[in-house]
Length: 224
Image (tube, rainbow, N blue to C red; front, side):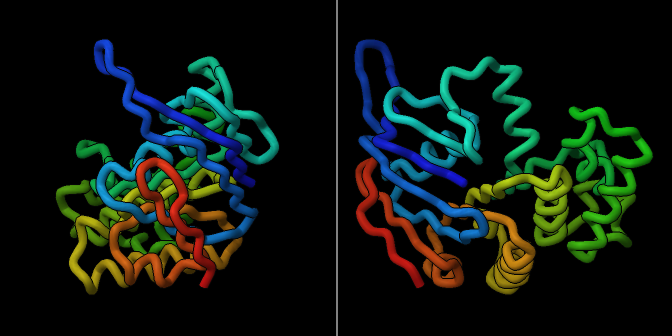
């Protein structure tokens, strides 16, 4: 599903080059549930951005579902993100002027999907996360946990190959965090490949595998 070979990424600021990923070798199989941990500056956010085709890389290779991700046009990169990847962010990234239903349907507007089918699939997504009764609510009418459930439904509406979650429980209290993680585990049991960046050991402990990054390299790769 995901394969990285000697992947390197650096950022350039003026005359300085700052290496962030320094040669990552990583394979994630179809259906795996993987946590990525590491201190601030370890490279975990950069790695997630590369996996999500939000950022490019300098050397090595990245293969996603059999396709080499390299030197893509912006149009192809956007198409691949929309078709293959679902995103869940710590800060939800919901559009404040759109209802929960419209937020979930949003990724389908970039495909040749009729409005009727978009809304049907979005409602199915809300039902899946237990929020069909909040379909018409705006984000400011939802709790933090409900917003994250909407975000999860949105991530799944395109039926992606892989779900990438960046600190999905970071903005939630402990009880709500457990509920959201329970939902992510249910999503995984339905066959989704899932990669979760987290700083919370209890979240990582519920994953099948935990990858620890340190100074831009994999320091440990532990299976449960």
